[in-house]
Image (cartoon, helix red, strand yellow):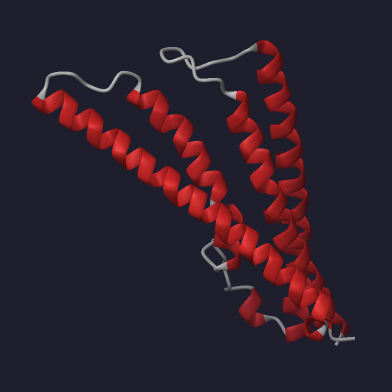
Amino acid sequence: MDIESKTWFTRLVRSINLASRRLERIGLAALMGMVLTALVDVVGSKLFNWPLPGSTEITSVIQVVAIASGLAYSKIDGRHIRVDFLAGRLSKRGGAALDIFISVLGLGLFVIAGWMTFDYGVTLLHRGNETFLLGIALYPFAFWIGLCCIPMCLVLITDLMTAVNRVLK
């Protein structure tokens, strides 16, 4: 059974890639927001002697959006760190078995991370935690990290299915 030739699998992978790409675009927009915040802060403080109040807080919360949004697409695009010194010495089947192990570990990590950040977001919501100066609520950003773990888990599941298929060939 060649899973990669199945149309349902191809559509699933395409849908996950599209959703991940859209999340990455949100992250790129957040990155631009960080740049604009820094620009306004620097220009305001140097030219007008008035730095942007709370620029550090704004940058910090936008940074959460920028980093979490790019998780899944960076995995799809091959931008995650991968050390091939061991995998290169293994047979094709051994390399696929190693990929299964790595996918299972990664899936476990991101399932737990997503679950725990959702739980943390609920805690922040009930406590009403905010940033100190501007009073920005923190719970939406914890929920955002948890939400961004979902496509990452889906990417790891498709990687796992592909690796299992390679072992079974």
